[in-house]
Image (cartoon, rainbow, N blue to C red; front, side):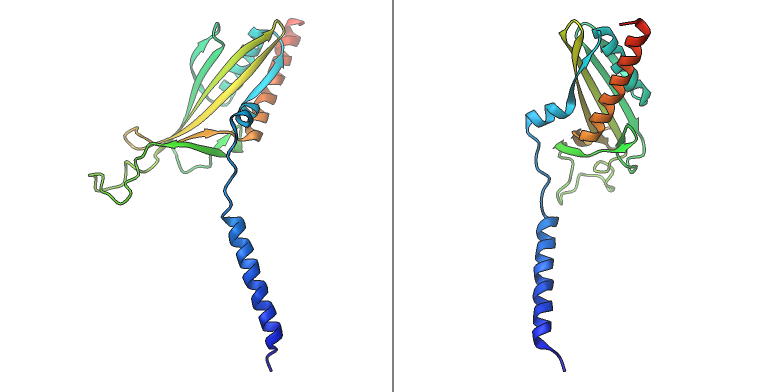
Amino acid sequence: MFNTKKMKCGFTATIIFSTLLMLTACQTVPQLTDMQKRQITTQDFNGSYDNILVATQSVIQDHQYVISQIDKDAGLIVAQKTNDNAQTQRTFLGMPVTVTSSSSSGFSNNGFSNGFSDNSLNTVNTNVLSLSATITPITKTSSEVRISIQEQGLNTRGGIVTSNQIYDQQTFQNLFSEIGVEIQRREAIQGN
């Protein structure tokens, strides 16, 4: 009635498939080296230093970042963007981003009471994206742009619950592409 040979074969195949599925599901994302991080977050551009600085500033502002500091001599731009709905998908330039956890504040209670009846100190209420860009002249007609983006999850009292550095390659490619287009537009207007 029952073909035990087929049942054993099917059972064996199921075990092998389940084992392979578990092994692939447990794989961790490889950590990026410092050199790989630098390659993702850095791009060289042709154009005047002033045009590259202003183009970078414009693109950052186009994405609703509020610029808190610009130092032309140091080539530094610092900006932030706040999202009060922490449950929304993490996006930058309209695309989902991959974050690499760099640290955590240690607010998790690990089974211990934090002295509050609710878990509000451990819950992300607001996400803040902090961005810094450095523009470094290479020659008179080219500069290097390096951008750092960090996401912090804040609780209801403004304490940091999570902190993640963003290294999503597609996000940075799109950002640098927009900066490049803006540089070309500015250079064409000025006849450079």
